[in-house]
Image (cartoon, rainbow, N blue to C red; front, side, top):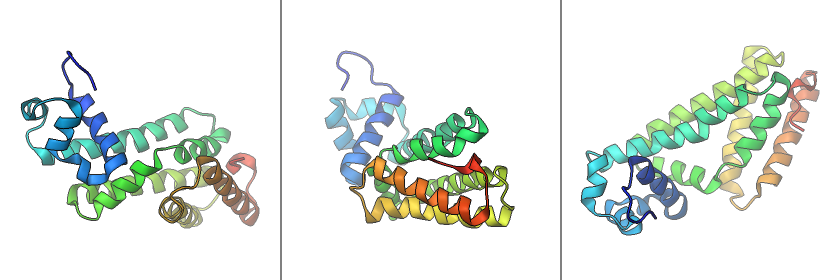
Length: 190
C-alpha cells in the first residue's frame, strides 16, 4: 500500500473492498486491515468512529461503485445500447466481491440492509429497461426479477464461470425474452 503518504478514507475503503473480495468478512478486522496497510489503529480510527461505521461506509462504497455508477454509465448510452452495455458491465464486475458481500449479509445487519437496497435498485433499473422496450410493467417486473435471480444465482452456482460465459447466457436470455414477447431489437443484448 502507500508508504510515506497519508492513508485516506478512500484508501481504507478500497483496501476493505479488496479484502472482502479476497478474504471475505474475516479480512475486515481492524487488525487485518492495519497490518495490510502498514498503518496503526489510530490511522484507521482517524477516519472512522468505529468498525461498524467503517462497515457501513464500505458497503455504501460497494453500492455506489457496483450499482449507482453502473446505472449512471448505462443511462449515458443511447437507449438501444443500454441493455447490451448493462450486460457487459454487470457481468464484468468482481464476482468474488459480489459473492463475499452476499455472504457477509448473512451475518451482518448493515450488509443485509444494503444488499437489499442494491437488489431493489438493480431490479427496478432492469424493470425500467424492459418498460422502455415496450413491456407492460407487470411483465417487465416478472422478467426483471427472473433475470436478476439468474444473475445472482449464477455467481453462487458457477463461481468459476467467466464473464464471457455469463454474457453469453445473458444474451441468450434476452433473445428468449425478445422472441417470447415480440420485442424489437431495443432489448437485444447481443
